[in-house]
Image (tube, rainbow, N blue to C red):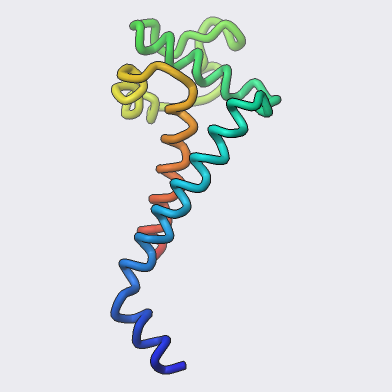
Length: 111
């Protein structure tokens, strides 16, 4: 048991980093598989994708489901930080991958 604790103490950051990478790869695959098999039944992905798409065209926070602006329903200033990445790819799959990356990286401060 002491040998195991010693390995954990010496290599803890590498173990956490490996676990984060494993999580990101696994859940990115699962979320994309779910997307490609039409298993998303809620409107949330469609709404946020439309908001990102319209914002990338200069119509910030415009949504047809929550007219006239998405800010009536949610206050999401982080959209501006993620918008440059979305502008490069412009598809909902990148939103799923970004969500998984952000959730995975949240383990680092906890460590």
